[in-house]
Structure formats: C-alpha cells, structure tokens
Length: 464
Image 1 (cartoon, rainbow, N blue to C red):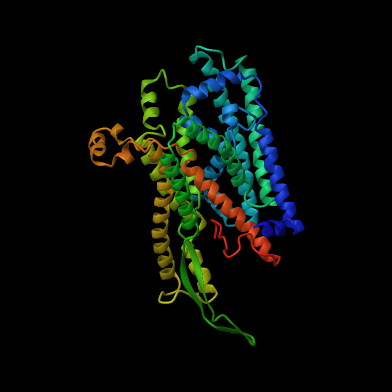
Image 2: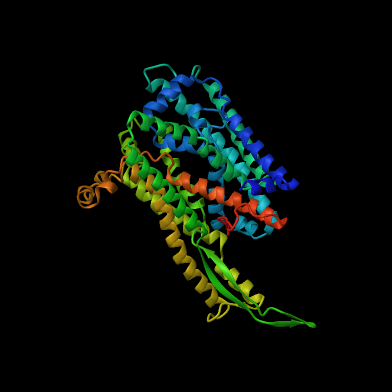
C-alpha cells in the first residue's frame, strides 16, 4: 500500500490532480465555517437539538452540517441536483432538450449551462424559503429570537449569501471534475457526509464508556456495518456479460472482425443516482411544509406527520421512488435500439439472437430484470438504518397496521435499538464515490505502467 501511494506522487500529472482535489475540498470545508449574517446561532442550535433530526437532519447531513450552523454553504449542492433532475425529466418530454442531448459535446455543454441557470433560480427560491422559515421561528419559539433583525433586508442578504455559496460549490465541483480526480459533485457530497464521521465515532465511544451501549451491541453494529459495506462493494461490481461476436469482413486487402467479446451490463447501472433523486423528490414537499409552518394547519400537519422519514408511508414512497428512478435513469443513459443498431452496423451480433429489433428486445429484457434486482438492493440498503434504529412502525398504518404489527417480526416493526449513524443513502454515496475515485487513480497508474493502487484486484467504478 505504501509503495502504491508513493507511485501516485511519482507521476507529476496525477500528483497535481490529487493535490488540487484536496485543496478544493479544503476550501469547501473552510467555507463551511463562514456564517450567514444576522443569525442568533445559539437559538438556532437549541432549535435543532429540540427538533431531534427529522427532515432538517436529513438535509443537514447532505450539506455537511452547514444547514445546522447556517453557513454560506447551507443549501449545499442540493439545488444543483434538483436542477439536474428537472432537466433530465424535461429531456424526455421536451423535443428541444431531447435534440440537444443527441448533439454530442455541444449539446451536453448547452444542457449543463441550463442546469447552472436552474441551480441559481432554485437557490434563490430555497434561500427565500429559509429566510421566511427562520423568521417564523421567532414567533413560534418562546426563547431568544433566531433572527436578530427580521425584514426584507435580512431576506435579501440571506438570498444573496446562500445563492452565492451554492454557485461557488457548483464551480468547485466542476473544477474538481475538470482538473482534479474523480467526480467533483459526488466528492463534495462525500466530503460533507464523511465530515460527520469523527463526531459519530466520538459519540459511539462515549456511549460505550457510559454504558449506554453494550459490548455485544457494539460488536453487532460493527459487524453489520462491515457486512453492509461488503454487500455494497460486491453488488456495485456485479455485472452480466452478454457475449458479442463480430463477423469477419474484408476492406481492401485487410480483414477486420472475427473476434468475440462481451458487453457488460451492470446490476446497478444507475449507481447511487436513483437514491439521490428519490431523496430529493421526497424532501421537497416536507421542506416546503416545514417552511410554511404546519403547526396551525391541521391538514398539513397530518400530511407532514405521515410523510415524516420515520413513518411507514414515507418508507413505502421512498422504495417506490427508488424503483421508478432506477428505470427512468436507465432509460435515459442506455437505449437498447441504438446499441443494437450500432452492433449491426459494425457486423456484431449476439449468438442465437437475430440482429436488429430482436437484439434490442433481448437487451431490454435482460436490462429490465437486472434493474429490478438493482432497485430492490438500493431500496433495502436505504431502509436498513431505519430498521436497525426504530423499525418500520407499521402499526401507524390505518386499518392493516395492527395486523401487520402482530405478525411481522419484532425487529422489523420495533427496530433493534442500534445507533446506525450513517443512513443507507450515505453509505451508498460514500462507498460508491470511493470506488469511483480509486478506479480513476488505478487507471492513471496502470496507463503509466505503474503498479495499481490495489494489488491483485481491479476496481470497477459504478459507470463500468
């Protein structure tokens, strides 16, 4: 391992990329300690402690703790992700964007530009919502005010500060992707999640020393985390190899083709993208209702309670959203008909399958089954922490809740009482991004005839 790390810093270009990536991530972490003006941070911290997590805790996790401290990066990269989701949805239904998506590099740059504009617009809207929400805490709480001087001056300052922070994060992510190593946006989310690891370890040690967590429970927790990480790595590398045979053809005096290869179809082709999409879609209405204030509106309060991330309705919608976005994302990035036409054009065929439409139907059927298994895997990993901590709480379901609670195992309905500090979404992102980054470093080393970063193995990233 030491020799492999020395090899990384022996290559000038790779060393420059790695150092640049770390420096940009350091800038992101430093900016996460610059507060928004006009906030009473003691009162805000008191509110977060009393709220006990919820949707705000989920959003704070993705922002790397910046929302809890209300720094200039409080919105995080979520507006960019939301804008990307909207653009990808519009690509399917808007012919202009569909045409752009097929124009190669020029069209991709145009769509990226629209995504940036959408990020700025969403940041303005979300920052205005945060400003109103912070002012509403003044009236709702009986203690010290959260906003020292409410009004449009505070709202304008909050909008300008948070929007600028999100635009800067977006720029940092693009610079890492272009000049550093790995995917910049993914690494920013990764850094935000991993930044909470020291506090989680410290809290775990404190629970063990105070007796709140027994040694057996600690061993079970560590074994579960190691097992989940192992399953994630195994599934992320799993693929179905479709044999492809290329016929021989003569061009001039040279003969081409005649070789046999394979087409890898990954079990989880979408990676962690469907989970992020599903989380963002479900977080939007909860965040909107949180900012609007649901205490004085009984209907909204009931809906908010049923959609809370600990409730069975939220878990069901979360699972269905992951399945939907798995199929949706695959339909965007992989077109079986185009693949079949390209194979036919270059004389390739799948043994036993007629080229053209039959090949496309064959690939589509295999991809459909693989995507279903991959979607279930993503859904189960995402719901695992909820099961370990407090269970699925099926007794809250109307009519059928008591019956399910009576017949289902207790560890599913009541949980195991283990403090699983990182949610399934977080683990997927952390492991997936780490595998992608290592794969890129590995490729750079092998390309320059150095030993790989991991000897005796080759890491395949989530994109294959």
